[in-house]
Length: 125
Image 1: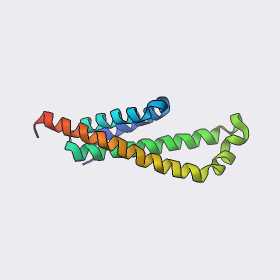
Image 2: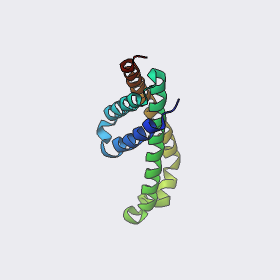
Image 3: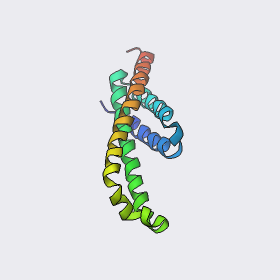
């Protein structure tokens, strides 16, 4: 049921949207979800599943990159960076990552279902 090619493309695009288009994140995620669902070619339910998985992977990778950035940033930002800053904001960051995980999966999943439905109609299923 999972088309890994579509999921990998989707999570790379989701990380790209998160990193470079923060102000337009919602619109970017809608577009990425549609692309993943369309590439998956597995009807609406398959498009929803593939886009939600891609969104979850994108959130996890973005969170890992954030942890690396905060940990390595201690020499540049003093008290606000490094392990001290990460420890202080650890619990809040955990809840934020969980909320973004749900957010990415829902937003990308909805348009992934639309993309999957459109691609399956083109094939005549």
